[in-house]
Image (tube, rainbow, N blue to C red; front, side, top):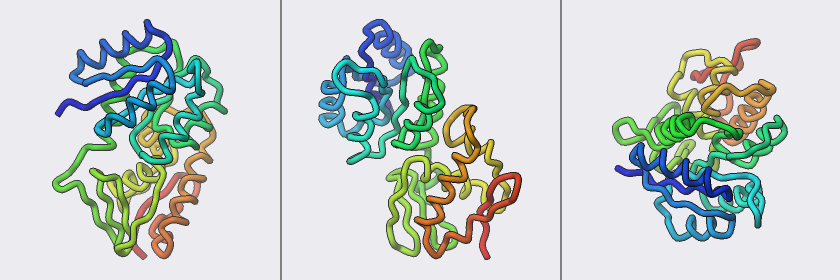
Amino acid sequence: MMHKVLVIEDEEGMRDILKTYLENNGYQVLTAENGKEGLDLFNENKDIKIILLDIMLPDISGWSLLKTIRETSKVPVMMITARGEEYDKLLGFELGADDYVVKPFSPREVVARVKAILSRTYGSQDDGKTEYQGIVMDVHSREVTVDGKKIELTPKEFDLLKLLLDNKGKVVSREKCLNEVWGYDFYGDLRTVDTHIKQLREKLGEKRNLIKTVWGIGYKLEGD
């Protein structure tokens, strides 16, 4: 199946390069040169599987556009920017971004990251459902229920839970959480993982104790 990608980038040269590389790798690509055009395309194409979003757009900031998208959709979003400060990365992740690349970058690296995100997000095993101790995860719809009740998770919370489910009974280091959930080496505070785990536990309610802390290392998912 050919995945549809939306590239929202105001620099024509960069937009064309990304479009060419993505199409050469089998993706259907829509492009927009500003936020309004990008949002219109997103609303008109419900089958978009991932968005590459520049932060510095001429009419609306990428942050604002990301917030608008997250109001109605959990579609993966990769932020693209010329700025590389840690604050920008943390802000993007807190707003629901799935990845973050800084210009100048290799188009091949971007394509590799797109493939990784799509595989992590839409990749399936059998019917795409994983069940453990009353927690049911559907990777197709990216929905999670606990004892039959649906809970709302952010993209990062969902991916963290999936990583723990895929490795249940095993200790997952905080470094591995950052590398696999964020898609690449993240040079920031490891407490980012702790914060997301805390939020995930709160949303799991009575199942919160299934996530065990392994002091000095990371976390693991196990039954009582």
